[in-house]
Amino acid sequence: MTKPGRIFWQTGEKMKHAARYIAPMLGLAALVLPMQAALAGSMIHKTAAVAGSTHHQRGGYSSGEIIAEGHKFFGKTTKGLARAVESVFARNGRPTGYILGQEASGAFIGGLRYGEGMLYMKNGQRRKVFWQGPSLGFDAGGNGSRVLMLVYNIDTAREIYDRFYGISGSAYLIGGLGVSYNSNQKVTVAPIRTGVGARLGANVGYLKMTSRPTWNPF
Image (cartoon, rainbow, N blue to C red):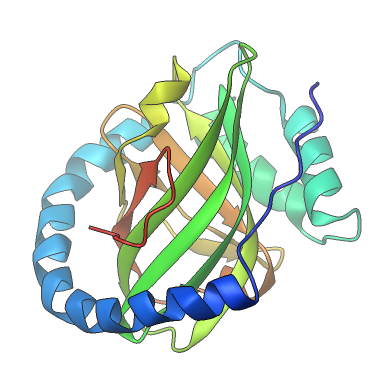
């Protein structure tokens, strides 16, 4: 199995520069998010059906492969990773791709989430991925985390570049890690977060996956 490349996250001076853009967007998010939440609500029933339809997918990664790569990325001392991965496998079966990356977010009623990582597919394809998105929740302040995303029903790497809406009621904590589900009616993404990013609020929103970094989550 291909060893994941090193993921770089913008820090230091770059993050200070980014804060100039993020701050005003927080205000914008407070206005736009109600409309986005209404749109996401219309997707919930459809995406929930999609999440359950991946269970019999074949030819994907085994749980052992995902856990091994997760331990390399998170660190072997990460507790609960196997339990979190197995819980996703029990619900959805084998993924045909996974993303390893890092993200930072801040939420206070209306918040923003930014991340970057690398998509690895069972057929050998790789693709750099950036994600952004608003969320609604009760979490306050900024947080950052490493993220392992299991990707289902993806046939080509370019399919990852889309909006993935959060599935209502799908988020939970297991083994100290946060698990949630996002879908676009075909492809389902199941992020597993460690660090302070694992904490859960009543988050409803979406992740916008792009091929290039952008500070615009809309």
